[in-house]
Image 1: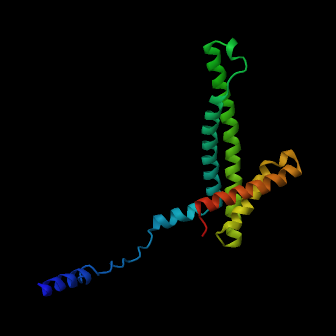
Image 2 (image 1 turned 90 degrees about the vertical axis):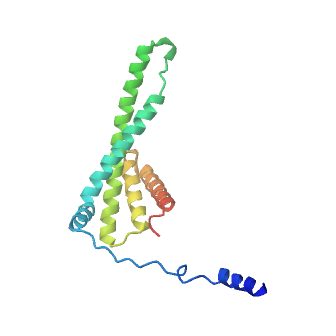
Image 3 (image 1 turned 120 degrees about the vertical axis):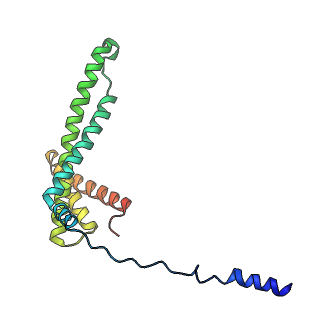
Length: 171
């Protein structure tokens, strides 16, 4: 009886050869010509900038529609339902167009600067994000004067780094 117990303990402690097999190492798959061409197209700074501008414009449009819908007319009690609807639709259209333009410009400037800096430095790191954020923030707030441009530069650069660290793209 003692021999059978020690034998079963031995079986549970020592794994069989089937359990200790290592996973097979798979060969590296080379990309196809279509994949290489698509990568080359996407690495073009102009393509990246246009794509970012379109996506930024779409995001700005949606945000403008949402925020425009939240605006209430000042004279809400004096307006009929139809007048309120027309007022809200106009507000949504105005706000969405304005936000779409702002976010499109922001996307184009940020991605263009980041891409150019990345290609010039031949590195993909947080410094590119800081420079792109600073240029974008400074450009977006330049109409308000040099102080506003400096604050915009620092603020957008800090925001860009925070987003970069949150998504942890550069490790």
